[in-house]
Length: 365
Image (cartoon, rainbow, N blue to C red; front, side):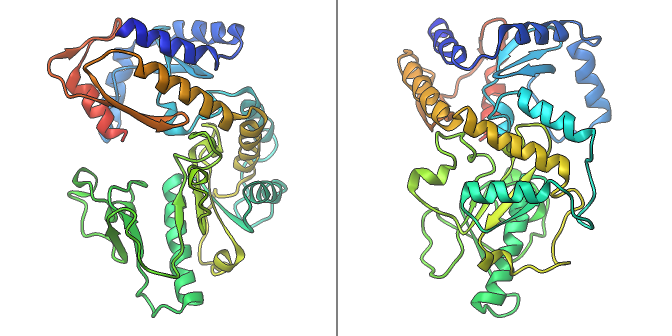
């Protein structure tokens, strides 16, 4: 099974490799690292909060679809930083955009205009077909902002009685770890021990919204920007959200950038002083986001994801295995459902208890 799986991954990888000279340089950089993996693990354990349980690999460089650990070992990155690096690790156009803008101007706050925000706003709204964009930094900030926008619209436009607006979430949702986000969760591992929870949210079974005259908010932070073989996952269903939330690949892994897009009827419900961010819309973020979007289009990454995803699922389906229950997905956003096992699951040169793999799948949805 493992040899056939390796063949399938190799076929997938060959179509996505950057120039070999660059990959060789990255490998050399990794080999020369001054610390061992164990030293890196220990330092983080001593001085860092224990809010993650990473796999025992210390990465130091990345290029395209590959990453290297501090021992110089190369890996094919299936996680892609939760779909943040859809353009590939350290894409040269994004690195160049960051370096050029970083030497010019990085932050002004929104107390002043800067010469990049307007350019970025025009580019992304025209590309995605919305009137306005509200720039933020992280994906969960985007979700929080969308909730504020929806509530303000409900009171000012729809006429909902003051503080009676509700935002409806489907069961099984995940959009972050802030108090608002966990207040909508149905996963006890996310919310247990963090109450009391934020009011104003309602959770219902998926696809069971019967109410009329509601705003549809699409969180495309992880699914959007070409990951599923379309620009947005919503595009598979020909659905246009009233409010669209983007993040992660909006910067290609270079910098925290998120965005909320909607039309004037919703966006203009918020007035100056009612929402903002010191870093949101800063010139460095905007310049990187423009470059990240350009790469998606120039390299036809939606089409690439659709083609490579089909190869991945087709080839993996040919592998005879009693471990794989099912394979599903769209584009390069896929789930491989693994049958629960006991003991040790052996991969080439990397023995890890099967329980570790099970935990990794659960944590990463």
